Length: 203
Image 1 (cartoon, rainbow, N blue to C red):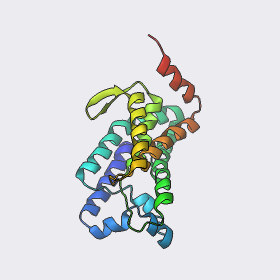
Image 2 (cartoon, one colour):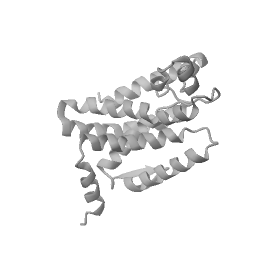
Image 3 (cartoon, rainbow, N blue to C red):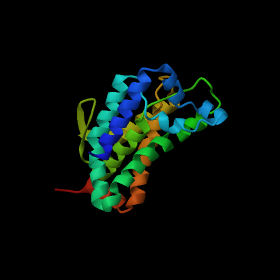
């Protein structure tokens, strides 16, 4: 069983529990105010295990199932027995790092909360884009090269994080994506040149 599938099983189980208990959902939400004023630091992790509804859960887990094993396979091929460990660090790191801007922005806003694994999912997805920028990704059933989807995704997330008003944590999407790229480059810096070569390769 792949690491991605294990993460999916844990996340689905946690989300199901939260669907059935509003109290649990409330205790696991990302609430920057509660983190700062109540020292509830565990919320950085638990908020990535729960989702708003079935569609939110399905979409995130579908993307993880689609791209997680591919990224994990690369890590395993490149780093051997440490590959699974690096993949877990990618996922958890993306989850935690992507929420830091949200924490900084809303730490004094008791009304604010968010949830979902989108930051971690973005990290995995953009690690794949770095590894295979011309690989086909379907965005709302429209096929396009990963690099095109990546640029559109980052631009949209950046714009919407500044605009606000739709109750979606676009900061987590954006910074999760950036983390996935930077983290994978730190593991193997030569990927930067390989990425450029893939983009401009002919024939």
